[in-house]
Image (cartoon, rainbow, N blue to C red; front, side, top):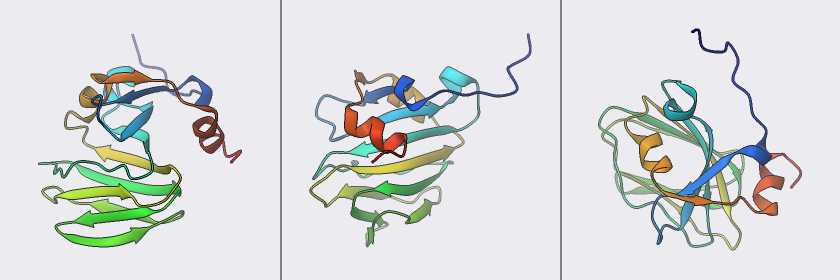
Length: 143
């Protein structure tokens, strides 16, 4: 059986997950190897005010972020830079990094990782989360 040539879904049908009960960010899954058979993971990462990723690195994967809404800081190997809508950055393999929401509203980042390096498994192994009206508005461009 051949895979479908086009994969598509709408924002109001995305599955979302929080990795752990105490995580201050969660992920709306766009495409990933587990659900779609692709080689990459593409999510919208949503950070609550004050939320952050734990310090982390990837042995082989590159990770790219594009800020859709909100403000924060991105730290890579101890160097921090402010981020906001329209900013993008890429993290090379082996770079320790943290993304932190420093604003009073949610921070939304389109996040792309290739190769997957277990990212989809980590996300989908987490706790299902329901996207709220604000999340759907941002994801559909209705802000």
